[in-house]
Image (cartoon, rainbow, N blue to C red; front, side, top):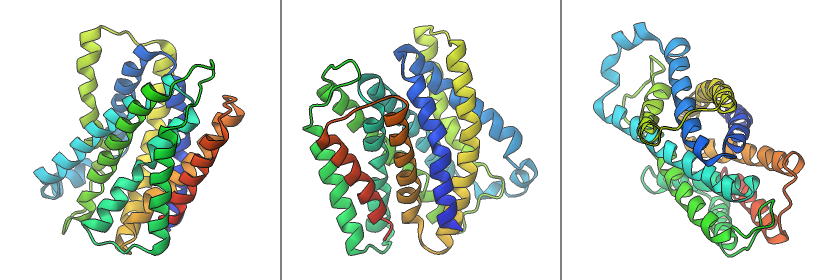
Length: 292
């Protein structure tokens, strides 16, 4: 069941990826998008997901450490989304997403090194493929849809997104490792969104007004964020019982990257160089191998 839920997790993420792609077209609206999405998501999960009766009864489960880890995860997730969308604004979206989502290698390594999760020779090969692909793309001079070079600026943005995304994924898997932790009130998605609320600060400082298009896209993304959160944590809980937490993101993100690459190719008409396509193929292969 955990494996099937992980695949569904990746399928649902596609909607969020497309929303980020569309929301990245206007750099100012990127700020608005990354405020409205967590705001709408927080409202939806508080209404439809959080079990308030269970929260009052089992509030002791949500220790200061758990709350801090999840809020910090949301903060890192905000930074990841911002850097990813700025990178999309600078270069091709499919390649950007592939590199950004390969940040799952960070929680994978963390689970192996810190939590002593088992690792196989194929998993090591997968990690090497991801590392080599990332380095190769850093030296690949691609062009965006307007035929402008973007490699240097784009690579700095996506490298930052990679690190922040890895921190986000690592932080919100740690509570599942803590002895006695449960989520009886389904509070995890709400706490994560709280960490993203700091986007109010730059929005107010810059006095940026949301466009109608951005608001609609944000609301759609928020609805699917709720579904993603539900499926993600269900998968996490199933896999944690079998000590298979390390495969959640390789399976989910691998599915997501493949589907978004198809979107970039057929809908956005993105045409990349042969080295870039080979690197993306290596990324997906490396992610799959991490599952073994």
